[in-house]
Length: 207
Image 1 (cartoon, rainbow, N blue to C red):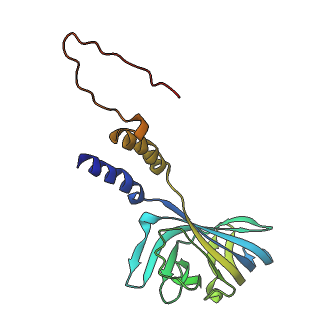
Image 2: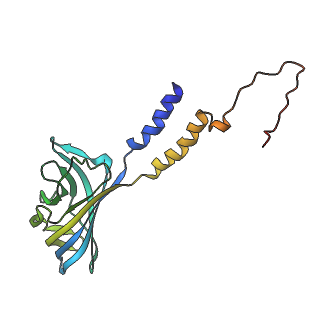
Image 3: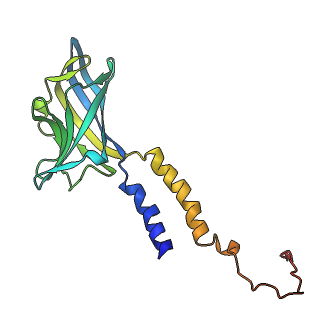
């Protein structure tokens, strides 16, 4: 029972730990940020959260507070300063919301019951929903307004923490030791020699 309990702790502790997660949207967009404009360029939106931050709102939506960056060719990296959140809504889809304006900037459908805690995708929408609300977003480069946001692909990737990887690296040798190592290396107990009897060690002969 002790061995079994130890194994359960080692093999369940990893998933129980909080893990960083990156949500990525890649599509084609046009618009302005501050005094700069861009037209029909490939845009990458990276959204950084943690699986521990996910919570439910009602029965049909998962929410995760996040930090949002955009990479726009010709402009570079743009950091969103508004408080944002990822959402996955059963009825609408998966997207980004702006807490300051309390609107969804856009979303992709269907959500397929995604809980924002695991790897997901790719999910492609040629015409995401609520794109007309993707404006008035505060960033380090000024206000962001998108007039076009199309052909968007969404993916989510969980990033294991170093502590989780360390746990597994340490845990596996412990499990091997607890079970006596690989079958060919397991220790076999022998009765103690009687008084006056010598113990002869023989090297395993190879054939």
